Length: 252
Image 1 (cartoon, rainbow, N blue to C red):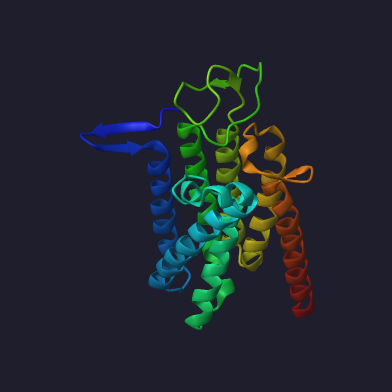
Image 2: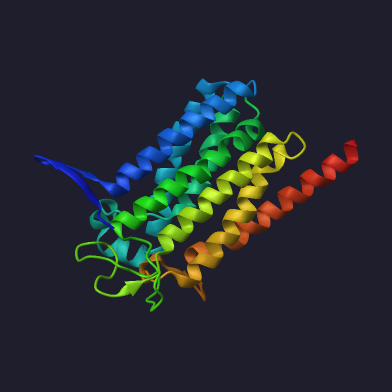
């Protein structure tokens, strides 16, 4: 919950950015090792990640703008320079970026998608720890002993005990990473890894939103923006998983 890790002169290392950087670097390193172990190109793996990050960044910001369109139109520059993002927009944009790279380079997208996706979950786990340090994505007020009081100056409401939903999400993402890694390492389930990510991440994100306390993330009807998107990504994961299972059954 202390976002300023180290200050040297005019430069400050922020916990949020540091944890995201660590997550990306660790994820890329492990994805490279997995690519080499499975006969895939580690250089293409890196390039897919770079492309996914670029497109995902733009998509995350665009999604944030769209769900706050009235405020954006009133003051566009404040939105473009703000730290507002929508994680789901980044995920979907990242997948699109990876697909486009594979399409252009004539690579098998499903090979790299299933290879990389476990490490996306791992990077997200680090990112959520960064959220905790910054105070964003905080939970509802609670009297439970697991509640956390954030200091003044953090992005969370200070002075009251809040559920540390960031740490709940980090733990969930790390468990998801372990599940996906095991799924990928099993040759019988390898090509279902991406579908499993869509199903499990969407379900977890849908549920955690019920105890989130930051109302600025936007709502569509009774659902938060992320819950609304989760409905579609969960359905997409189920459909993909079912199609892959049917394909397996036909080849048996």
